[in-house]
Amino acid sequence: MSFWQQQRVVVTGGAGFLGRHVVGKLRRRGCGQVFVPLIEEYDLRDRDVIGRMLEHSDPTMVVHLAASVGGIGANREHPGSFFYDNLIMGVELMEQSRRRGVEKLVAIGTVCAYPKFTPVPFKEDDIWNGYPEETNAPYGLAKKMLLVQAQAYRQEYGYNAIFLIPVNLYGPWDNFNPASSHVIPALILKCQQAIDSGADCIEVWGTGQASREFLYVDDAAEGILLGAEHYNDPDPVNLGTGGEITIADLVQLIARLMEFEGEIRWDTTKPDGQPRRRLDTSRAKERFGFVAQTGFEAGLKNTIDWFRQYRPDQTEWRVPPPSEA
Image (cartoon, rainbow, N blue to C red):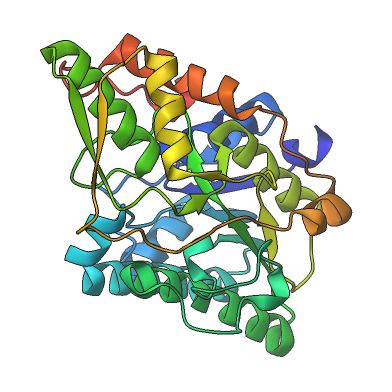
């Protein structure tokens, strides 16, 4: 508690999916000065705006969660903007933070930064051993440049920037927009809409053979704050569960939990993405004591219950500000 009571923390992306969980945990830890720059006032792609934001908030720490993100379809449609937006935000934010004397910056990477055929489980030392999976390479490489910048700034300036790599996230407040959502919210939405309409099937991209690891968003927020408080080294650190599930098994699990009994039809003309994703999570445990606590089925049930309560696809619903998260 005493550590966080002494901090003034900027959380970029703090009004978003992961950010509201991080902000909520910060407040429960006693951090009374948490600033969340909203895009309507602070477009972090503009260096002058970043400078104004830092001058206004005067942070001791920046947790950089803001990102332009999406699933395979969104990455294929917007590779240029995903590359530029994520690169320019991170690079300028770290530079401005260094210049203004912000004591620490926590940069959040992505599992998409790993090479397409990384040996499983993915170890942090393998992150440079090949090119990322093509459908999301621009996004993954833009985020990976923050690791390069953090290590270079530590070497030249002694700047304390760390780089954490969460695996695919899911949970309450996820993005359920079918144009940009990731696989779990997309599948929950498909099943619910089929149930609502009485449809006897849903269509899913790919073959179902690819596998993924998923981290419950509340666990991810905990890992980020443990790293922010206790970790001060240049090495990247994975945040995950160490588990893995095929997309085919994931679809069946979500359908069972939602009581959808229709047919699953696979559109094999659509890409699977990276063949497998499972992280080696030993470094996070060793360096700052992070171990995920939420079982996958329990996390899915929480996510489905939240979705069915709010139905963001159907109703006008108010996203509470971070202070209420």
